Length: 363
Image (cartoon, rainbow, N blue to C red; front, side, top):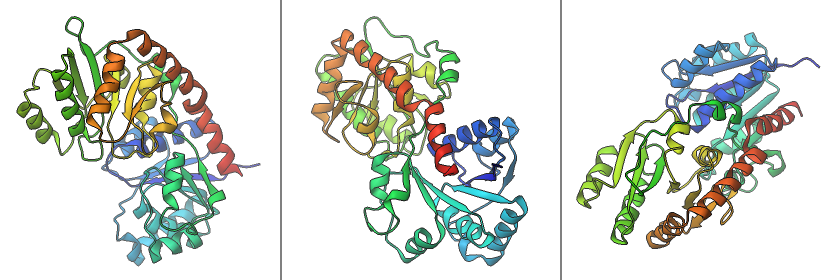
């Protein structure tokens, strides 16, 4: 059967998990012979990577109010018709409102909304219209994300048409990447790590508070924080106030995640919520055990006492205890790390998740 054109529509300027997913999946489906087209913002990292990879692409600018602009809708309708798009996978709520509506008017057969945030969808008149009259399918990146889609309105969309497809990591490329550590430890200190945007969602402030507890208990350690964001100066100031200048090290944005994970003994995740934590899978791929919250989608990725240890959200003492439990027992760290690697191979290799997507869009 001839494969219809598959359009990945993602207008987000920033680079994050959703953008990584769109790029990884579009690239691999194109390599398998699918007629792929990527639509994104020209000012985005996704646009740069798509262009460099030689994928068919076009640029677009979408705002939250674009669906109110008749000219924008007409342009998108004509675009979908001209390109003979059969399936479109949309990323943002603003993409769904504008491009989803245009795709419906253009006669696109499959209009799929990919939800990557475990945040409840508002039960608004607009959302009820979109999910009942426009969207034909929904991809959620975790069971927790699937749950939150219907949390405000169980009848918003048929549950059986929401497919959970986990984010995948390209294990073959990841394993082939350079793994030389980025950071050299001082003697027998334990190296703890966190990577992500420096923002309230990622909650690095919590980790600095935990670092103060660890220091008070006599642990010799460094906490390496990779990433940048709007809270960078606030977090650095907090570390100074607590006298943790030597213990907390801000590395800035790190692109070579394998080298970062290879530098640390434990990966710490303190996010208030996650749709799906790519960094957790990257840590497990390098056999790095994890300490994280028992909340959101994290327990779907990290199995307590098997690939890491989980603590109640925002419980400083319990989180610190979990870290100390592993910091003082390297053999347990090794066991958890080995199990984590096996779990990635079984569930989170991109070849596994890509197969699930192919079945879904081909159904």
